Image (cartoon, rainbow, N blue to C red; front, side):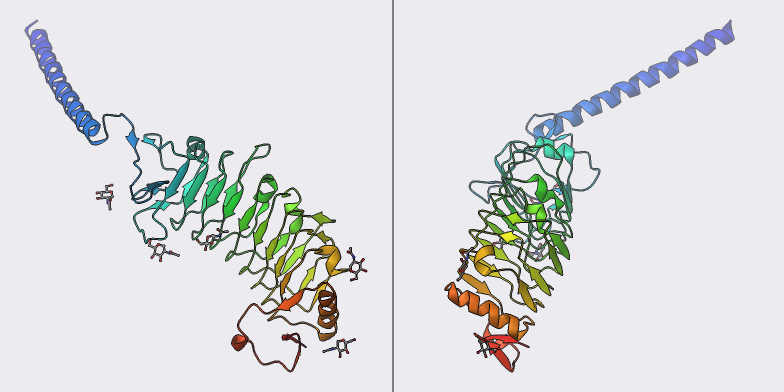
Length: 321
Ligand SMILES: *[C@@H]1O[C@H](CO)[C@@H](O)[C@H](O)[C@H]1NC(C)=O
Ligand SMILES: *[C@@H]1O[C@H](CO)[C@@H](O)[C@H](O)[C@H]1NC(C)=O
Ligand SMILES: *[C@@H]1O[C@H](CO)[C@@H](O)[C@H](O)[C@H]1NC(C)=O
Ligand SMILES: *[C@@H]1O[C@H](CO)[C@@H](O)[C@H](O)[C@H]1NC(C)=O
Ligand SMILES: *[C@@H]1O[C@H](CO)[C@@H](O)[C@H](O)[C@H]1NC(C)=O
């Protein structure tokens, strides 16, 4: 009995102590919550604020997003024009390595996104996005889903690491695509089959060796096609019909000839063709340049003549061998 009483006294004492420490913990939590609420404007989630550097866009800097990070606590600004990072100003406090599906779903109301020089690698696209500038990153994968009605029109992926661009098949509204300075090696132009709005395509400064086309390809709006600084040795344009193409740049490749039936069949509105720094075979070059003259198109040099190595034969200042 005594023993038992003593026991329950001990149990009571333990329970009392536990209770006290629970209350202490709870009040500590309450104080902490209160401080957090003061710091983050009395909201439970944490809100990302737009910094005031830019006028029309909401710039988010000094923030890091890496893979498998839980962002559910954070509230992102509901803004049509978002910028992550402070490009072109140097910024080593902002990293957005990935935009996953969950984050993409929360950025639905953003129509224009600038996300330059923040070490981006992969991103899930959302349907309302119309303009994306993701230049100067380590970007190699833009993820699209079949059957979505993507609105993307302007896409700048320059200075990145793309080796394939299959995503363009899902982007029928695309108007400009800048892929300069990437890691492309070969490319099927049939990917652009649905890109009937495409107006400017920049593929310069890649490592492109081959461009193939699966059947005939009509790009009715394409006005500028830039292919300079690649590794092309043959360009087969015989299946292309780019009826609005004004400017074609194939300078600084390894081209020996252009394969097409007639220049005016593939490019009836051509005005400027840059051809310098290739390995043109003189007979072919002569024939092509004669066709160009008949159409009133001048073969042009894109690079300064001083850079050009001395060549023994040339036609219209374009070296041939
Ligand atoms: C960046 O954020 C940290 C807290 O996350 C803060 O201490 C620091 O002052 C901020 N720096 C700038 C430049 O805003
Ligand atoms: C990118 O930002 C870093 C600082 O984080 C800077 O050193 C570098 O020059 C920037 N790169 C470009 C291409 O602006
Ligand atoms: C794409 O971004 C690069 C580098 O930021 C810039 O120089 C270029 O003008 C942009 N391209 C387009 C089509 O706006
Ligand atoms: C291309 O030009 C040639 C002569 O310059 C002409 O005979 C031919 O009909 C033209 N073809 C097209 C498709 O315009
Ligand atoms: C180009 O062709 C024309 C006419 O066939 C010929 O007179 C000329 O010598 C050729 N030029 C070269 C550099 O092959």
